[in-house]
Length: 516
Picture: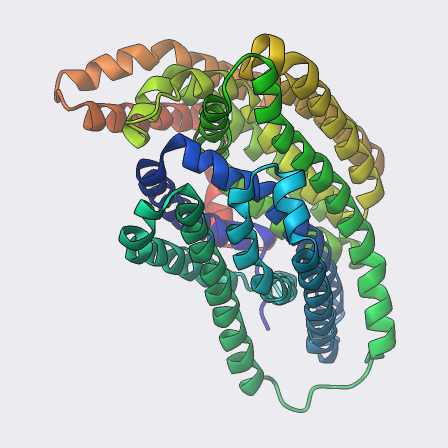
């Protein structure tokens, strides 16, 4: 079986991620216009609970499977690949059923005491049967990431979005007049059925590949299932504990935001509206470019694990360095874009809600948010989960402090300042660990100085670019779209001209040649 480079896998995931994000924006725009900012705020209250349960169950298993499969694949012990996946599937489903049972028992407590809004009860109830399904899907995704075959996961993600959007559109006319509780439940049902569709695609491809699998595979190097289970737990447990603690802190952080807005003098309805604008409208726009960094983070884990197992340390440093450089390029370009056109971008997508001010201040978080995600993938690939956990806890503690003390005084601006400071601090700590472990040097010129100059130039000329396209069309939407594409094109061209993006490397990456 030919092995694809981590960059090729990342490119495929980026393309799929772009399609998924586009579908996601269509869904969010439709949903926000349907239920308003208060409805989005109510829907976002469920997200911390969803993230807490799902990320804890899935992240550790997915990373453990991809890491173990990549190592066995590199050693050509092909017989172990499906044994690892089977053990992970069984473990995931059992854990999912246990969590679902516990959530059902404490459903009233979660909705009324923790979330303090009984309207979330029905939505949480709908999520319960989907937890084992999502857990099982994580094991299969880990298998595909481990063998560096990301097409099945890409297709499953697109199919999930199509199902989710279709369900909401079909049910909207029946539920929207019944109140926000039922409208929120409708959105949750779409999300739940989308997750089931995701697993269905992954299982179909897995069964199909099993039937077409290689016959007479050598049994040399076969791992006992007891050892596989032990190794999965050994790798997954620290990652899951990491995600559990960070998710707990993240859930506490997000649930606390509307409450501290209340302390600052806003009514409950107004605080939920502001919360919905921040977490359900503006943040998804800021994190849209994360389709690149999340793809890099996912593919870095098996790529680094495989390279380390083969002692290709030069390849490890190359992959890390290029991923960090690409993240900085992305961060500077989109920081400039969101600073230059916040009202225009917000006006196109959410006409009923003004999110320009929130989008503008969130723009300063771009670089650190994207970099934190890439470095997390690097640390997981190097097996530094404990250090990653420590750094994440520090970052969450800083943000919660700002939520509690700054929001009542400064509003959402105080929270955004907390995001910037916490993300920057976590990135510095992660960088120190990566440099100490790999001996890699910091390339200030190509990581920071050159991309920073281009980003500054993009911001400086942004008004002129918008005015230029204003000559050709008086349509607000088209003018903004052309200005965005023009400004991004200028950034990419300048990055290439000054040598940050090298045409030789781009050609090599697009041809999907392996870096040794």
